[in-house]
Amino acid sequence: MDGDFRTSFVREPVALRHFPALVLNADYRPLSYYPLSLWTWQDAIKAAYLDRVSIVAQYDKTVRSQRDEIRIPSVVVLKDFIKPQKRVAFTRFNLFLRDEFCCQYCGAKGDLTFDHVIPRARGGVTSWENVVAACSPCNLRKGSRSLRECGLQLNRKPQQPMPEEMHAHGRRFPPNYLHVSWLDFLYWDAELDA
Image 1: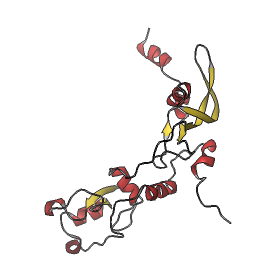
Image 2: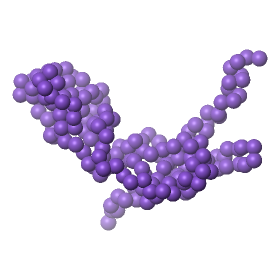
Image 3: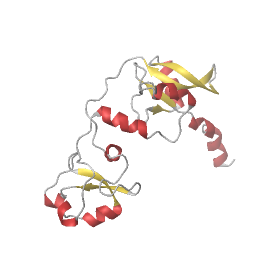
Image 4: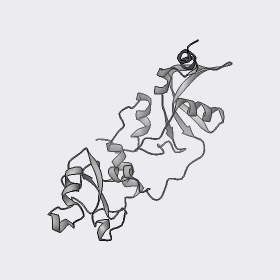
C-alpha cells in the first residue's frame, strides 16, 4: 500500500482545521484582541471535557469519537478568571501594533521593519522608548544617523504602551476571519452609537 494513503487516512479532515474557538475570560471578554485569543477546536473540546471552560456557542459541524458525537465549540469561556497582564511584552508584533502598522516617519503601510531612533551604534538601546516601526526606504535613509542628520521626523514620540491602549489598537485591526457567533463577545464593551 502507498504511504500517502495511510497518512492521509489518519490525518484530520482538512475542513475541521478551520473551526477555531474564541476564548473568553471568566468576565466574558476576550483574553486578547490582537492577536485574537483563539484555540483549535481540539483544544476547546479537551478543555470542555476537563471542565476548564463552558461552551457558549457552537458551529453546525460535529466530530465523532468512539462513544460521542460533539458539536464543535465556536466560543468558550474560562471558568477561572485570568488576571490581565499589567505590562505589554516588548515584541516585534506588539511594536507594530502600537505604531498601528505604519511607518513612524512617513506613514507608509506594509514592508515594515523596526528602527532605533537613537542608533545602537551611538548607544541607543532596544526599548519601547527608542524603537519604532519604519518602512524599508525610511530605515535605509536613516541608517545609523540621528533624526536631525538625515532630515526625518517622528510622527509621534515612542513610549511603552498600556494594555488598554493595545486592546484599543487591536479592535481596529480585526483578523481576516470573524465567525458570526463571536461578534457579540468581541465588541460588547465598545460605546454604542446614539
